[in-house]
Length: 248
Image 1 (tube, rainbow, N blue to C red):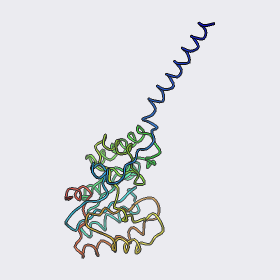
Image 2: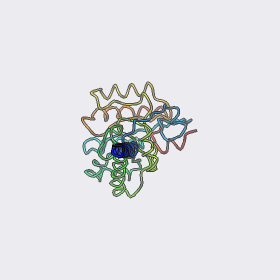
Image 3: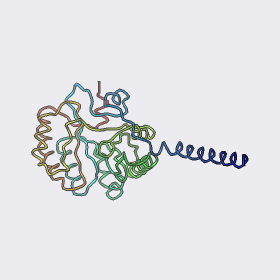
Image 4: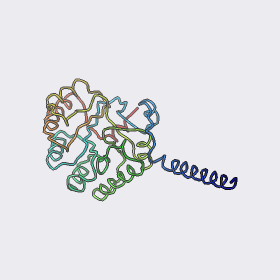
């Protein structure tokens, strides 16, 4: 009887050990998000929202493209006013419209990674996010023959996991200046977008627009107003990387 109890105890402890070991191995894949406040991330330089600059320079950024309907119009406007921008593109869109990606690159704009499939980055494990970014990177590299250095997470979400994946792949995480989200994915008019930006813009700001996913005629209208007015006020439009290089 004593021997049977000992055997049962041994089996019990072995099973407990196996369960604990499995949980330990799976923890990195399904960990609870670790958050830090903005000040902590800014100190590390791993996540940026804007740049501290003396010159009147800002960065226009466009997410989710390219789109055959709106990206080409945006590129025409940027060329008209001598503006450069950063396009955070999706890998699957780049596969469908490689010529637009090539045009962006050829015209001196910067291209950043915005994932391949646009997953909610806070809802997928580490290895899936890493694989998605690598897939997008390879698609775009095959088009332009150059590596990307910037990553914008979907919905602007960032935590310890997202930043670790970005660092592992040699990306800097770029969000946008709080208050400079155009919200052009809503039904807000281009005139209203332009007015709000002109009232609040400051040197070093990073502005958020979209060039794919719905009707972005409001984006076009906002740019038609913003570009000449801000240029007249002495602002220049440069890429995110160029903006960060000017940071004090």
